[in-house]
Image (cartoon, rainbow, N blue to C red; front, side, top):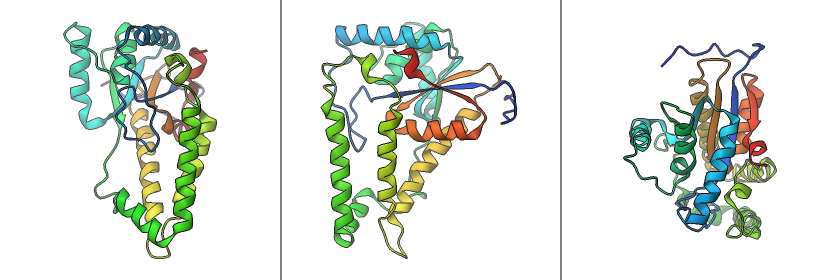
Length: 259
């Protein structure tokens, strides 16, 4: 890799990060609230993805960074290079459908994995334990959190995603992200003076997003770099905050290219 650009907040010329909030097209069901979406390999959805790829290319990213843990970057790029040589069939996930296509059509040599997901040694409790503990010890807070998650799910499903185009769904909804972010502060209240169950869980979420930020900074080799950062929309609020407050980047939301 080329020598990294010396990132400084007082640099007059700064690299750019372009934030693209996405939904998980393969429907893995791993988020607290998930979008149930039809088959993105269907001809109609493929046309919509083609439209999005053409529009996002107009952001002229020099690098594409995705929601894949750093440890899997070699495998990710094996698939990407096979795709470029016509030997790999794209799957349903957004990395294949969007990132591979954008990077290949802009003649990028690589895709960059910048995620971090280590739990062991960082979160001392399982989600099941935290939920059970909260229900037993803080039932009012448990009910509040349940209601807030249900509100998020209701707002999500008020939009008829099946009738929406992929272009309409993609984007970093920072206002919705703010509401989700507020829920983490409620979650941080789980526990007592001696057991900080909620705080430990929220700290992991902050650590994950801060690690994503740090990993992106290591990609920059020039002030002309434009890094398209594709992550689940739930990350957009914190990632936007971290990149903005760092003073190291110009920050764009990819939404403006999808208008």
